[in-house]
Image (cartoon, rainbow, N blue to C red; front, side, top):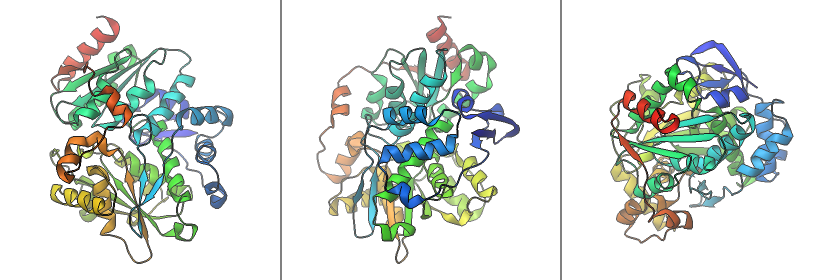
Length: 429
């Protein structure tokens, strides 16, 4: 598998190098030079999840790792289901919150950790990542206890749910967390600055586990196939995926799945008030506003990093821009959607509710909608209970960490302060 830096086409790397490096020169994202079309989609959809995923990822990665190693990685990483639940006659939820940290990012985080532990040859690595909520927990748990790998997670202080935070700030050991006194975009900017600084990049053997890392993105392709496999065969060519979108890795993965031959009719990019992409799709003008804090905090992103990959798919002619529609859902309608779902007998949290609202108002005759349930409702317990007036019990992973001590450091959104903190933490300097 060859990947190209979307900002510097002269930089082309292998899959292993892209996973180890994270970002390319000038903060460029790596993206496959070619995306293979799969044969016999119906035959693939008849396979079990893990077996199908091995074939999909082997096709994407090519012969570089070998199918045996890909099988080892998948069978270690994908140990939990991604069930589809019917919510109404023509709308379904793809539940991606049955992993160890109750969020869709368990798929990408665990796949990346298993890839990196096999291709790093025992050399020290520092994973530096920013989180608006779920990435932190998924990455922390995926890498916790792995030899020669340290993890530093930046998150916006006071802007993620307390239970989300406890999932990754209580682990300790090789997991180091930093509360940044700003928003997620500032955290992401600090990660990018670190990669641009050769002292940090080389001195700490830096890597990133955000969805900018290609391994995480490729893992997410697999659950789109799993969703379609669970739908009635006669409806598969009329599927509309509504994707709750913040950094846009999830939507990118779905579009790669379609490029490979999965019969997805179209996508809805469902955002909260941070509506850069819906406005861009309507006006053609890329005009990010200041990030707005919302109850769907994991989507509080005004400058989504993965958008250049979607543009690459369109510019290369794999997909037409018309395959995506954008929809922004405000706070009032988010709450209304949560209550509507409860009337249907389905308890959900704000991110999935936004995707449900978008798809339930956008379906055309004959279409069926699938909205992505990206996190367990209990991860947003306070918000869900306040909106629905219904008590939620804590699933075991949250109950286990709820009363543990948080171990994060606190820093301003200042690059030099972060750099000094990381060197003191990891090098004793």
